[in-house]
Image 1 (cartoon, rainbow, N blue to C red):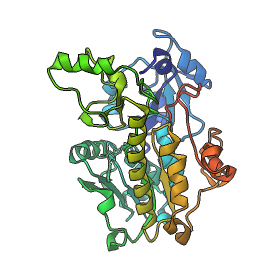
Image 2: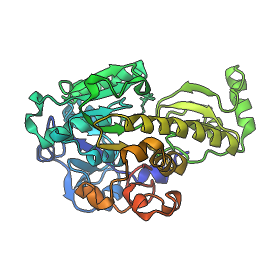
Image 3: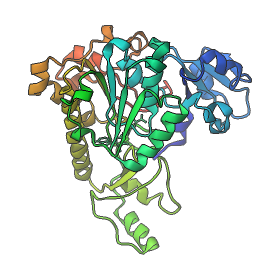
Image 4: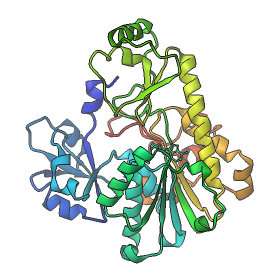
Length: 374
Ligand code: SAM
């Protein structure tokens, strides 16, 4: 579970929404009482009650790290969509994809709640401020209709409604890449469901030795214990109900809050296999868009099974070979991320260091103040 230390090592990351505001504007308003620092560690370590600090991130444009402890959701800027609370690593995909007007339309395949959809809109706007009237569309697909409502709301508040076509309840895998309306899709962002093991507050490997904790839980609730591998219900990120603390150590909670009972490493492996098969299918489907030039694939998982191994299998597929899909070399990546030195695992990339270097990772608890991400 979350260790207090793990959470204490994370600042509050704030993405300034370029569609509604600017870093300068936010430094003068929302963060006017904060002191500027060039040391991220100072922000991470600033104790409660001390002067609040703000740091401008050197890797991702329009990203700030501020002292934890203030509820920024109560600020005017948050209510007006000027700031979005988004972990630094979660800002990598849209920035790395770097959609430009010459790339044509954009797809966000698994979009809710919309952090990356709204970031894509902001990146487009940055390249072309007249974007409001530009005939360039972000197609945002979301299979879960309930989650699509959150996406709708977020896109509206962030000011990217005009550019974004939301398809609530739309399974990306049922979208026909050859359809006329997608003929100009040049870039795709894939951020599919994953184990969520990189989220701060989640174990990468749940404890596997507490079978009687589940019995206790079921006695308390008068319900039979769920079967191994069965998804039992959804919960919000980080939510742990009273009396469930012990039992929750047997639950794998994914990035959407689905719980799966995991009582053995076999269960965990089965869950990872199911997730990675789905992730690979999503990636192979994206390869089929006729005008596609660039794709980002991301997860908030620490497991190579969901990350490098999915990428390697995708690259070895027939369609990848036929269409010439390859990893974008580190040197060809956007400048801020070229400088980010945490890269893919070479041993999971068949020893190919160029592929590993093309992959970007982050590790929670390594002092960089971010979640585990790929
Ligand atoms: N990109 C989002 C963001 O940054 O806010 C987070 C996406 S979340 C990791 C994955 C989302 O994909 C979930 O909302 C899930 O319902 C959706 N999803 C899963 N399978 C899908 C599919 N086949 N087609 C479309 N959406 C899907």
